[in-house]
Length: 150
Image (cartoon, rainbow, N blue to C red; front, side, top):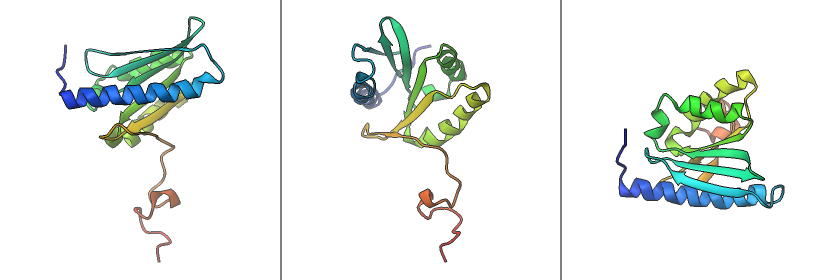
């Protein structure tokens, strides 16, 4: 089923895809100088980026919208990429980043942990999502339980 997305959401996804492609060129350019990067926007409005080198897939990336991320088949899409020994990169809305990071931990049980997660904000700025931090940890900037805050 096709979903109609707003012009601003469509523009945001296109901006994030273009910025991610710039990052990919830097990331893979040293080791794989002839890598080919292709992209498309699927009918659901999410961006799909593929990186190949000598006709072999290196990575598959998905720039998800808040709605596309909720589809039950997403886990199967991600599992397929990981089982094919490609690097999986997910770029998700900032509001969904921590939940997605925790959800992806399920794949670690099968030794499928070669994935990266990035988030993007309303302006298309991309940030890497690190490991989840416990509430009250130093990286939580004092927003946690108040341990050590006197």
